[in-house]
Amino acid sequence: MYEYLTGEVVQISEGHTVLEVAGVGHRLRAPSGTLRKLKDGATARLFISHRIRDEQLVMFGFSHPEERDFFDRICQVSGVGPASALALLSHVEQDQLRTSVLEGDTTPLERVKGIGKKTAQRIVLDLRGALEKEDLMASAGSPATIGVPEGAAADAVRALQVLGFHITDAQDRVRKVVGDHPKEKSAEQLVRLASRGR
Image 1 (cartoon, rainbow, N blue to C red):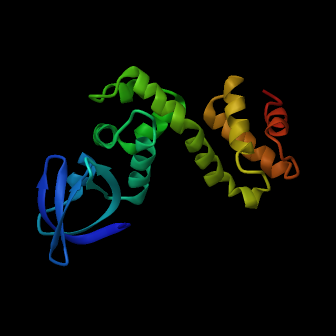
Image 2: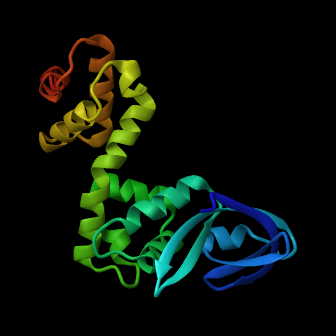
C-alpha cells in the first residue's frame, strides 16, 4: 500500500481531491484542512490511509503523516468509521482534538455531526492513555533511554490524575522522578515519589 503520493492536483471538491501521479488520477478523500492547502495545478504530497468499503479500496489523503496516523487511530475506536473520523478532523483542529482527548473534554467532539455523547466518550476513553504515553515519552525520552518499562510512566501519570493532579503537573512530576531516581521501575514507586510535596 502507498505511504504517500506526490503529483499534480487536478481537482478539488468538497470532501475530496484528485491527484494525478504518472498519468493516473487518484481520488482521495481528505479533511477540509488538507483541502484548503491544495491549489489546482500545483504539485502536492499527500500521506495515504487505505480503507476497504463495499469491497472497494477507498484512499484518504492528509497533508501530514501525524494527521494521517491520528485518523487511523480514531478509526480503530469501536463504532467509529472513516466518515466520522474524517468529519472530526475536518471540524476540529488536530491540536484541539488532541487536547480535548487528554483533558477528557468531549464537548468539541459532540459538536460534530454524527458524533454523539457516547461516541465522543468512547473516543476519549480509547485514545487518552496512548496520547498521554506519547506526550510523556516525547518529553522524557524513550523507555530505553530513561530506564522505565514502557507503560509505567504513563500509568503513573494516569494515577496522579486520579489523585487530582492536572495532566501537565502529573507529567512534569513523573519526568522529574524519572530523572532523579532512574532505578525506580514501577508505576507505584513513581506515583509515591511524584506525589510528594503537593
